[in-house]
Image (cartoon, rainbow, N blue to C red; front, side, top):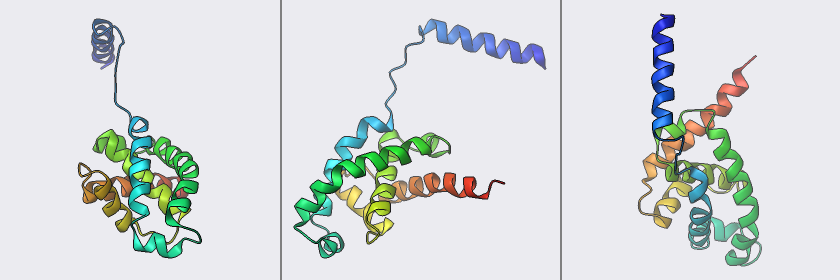
Length: 148
C-alpha cells in the first residue's frame, strides 16, 4: 500500500516536472467582471428590479456594481470548499456566485429570475446549469452550519 502511494506520488511529480509546473488555468474570477457588467445591463430591463429602484434603474445598477463584484468574489472563493468548480465550467461558477451575490444584496430578486437574466446576458450560460451551481455553492454553507 505505501509503495503504491509512493509510486503514485513519484509519477505525479514526474508529470509536473514534464510540464515544468506551468499551468494556464481559466478561473471563475477571470469571467466575473464581464458577467457582472452584462448582468447589470439585464437588471435595468427587469421589471422586478426596476420596480424596487428608488432612482433610475441605470443609477441603481451602477451603484450596485462595486458591492456586487466584492460579494460575488467572496461567494466564488467559498465555492472552492465544495464541488461546484469540479462540476461546471469556470464561467458557470462565476455566474452562480454572481446570482447568489445579487440575491444576497437585492432580496427582491428570485434566484430563478437571476438565472434567466444571466442566460439573457450570456447565451452560453444554461439556466439549469447556473441553478445547479448555485445549489452547490449554497450547500457549502449548509454543510458548514451543520458542523458541530
